[in-house]
Image (cartoon, rainbow, N blue to C red):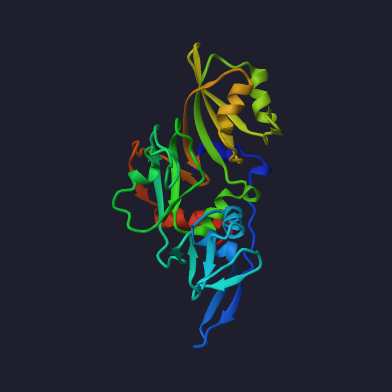
Length: 272
């Protein structure tokens, strides 16, 4: 467990919630879960629920050969569901992978610009997995992959406030006041960040190493926070995500989560 966890105030606690999936009966009498279509796609790891809704509205989703372009349709694992002509299904074999993402890779399954993606690093993984959240091209550190759409959705959803811990090397030495601004929440573009935990790890004079803990996941948020106090980021690494820690894993290396880590994530997100 990360050292900062003992310092976390009550608002860091992760709430649990119930999925509320209904049960239906097959002809053989076997109980089968029924999902709203967008939730089914999210559980399959195709996309977040919001993105899945966009796919549906754009007519990219078929159920049993028919295009579905409106919300409200329910499906089970026995229905034939396709996205862009490719079949999707609930994976029986759930896979959870932790990667140390190096700089110079984009966090996406396919990149239209032809750049290297994090998927190129998962050699030997047969299951169709997806990254949970993002790390930008110039950042490194812990990245989680899974084909468990339910877990991925809960890890990323703001209501669960899953913490992310970063080590940021920034230009110069921030003042005590600047650190307090980060801790209280700082105005960035059109929003104010939630409170953060900030610890000075090392002051080199011309640069400073900070440990920053947040529970939001907005685009390039830590970089923008540091820019807002006048100390741009030189290097950024994510070292923890929820109860997961990067540890001694080298850049480009990956490993499967242990049973204990999987169970802890399930408890953290209210699934198990």
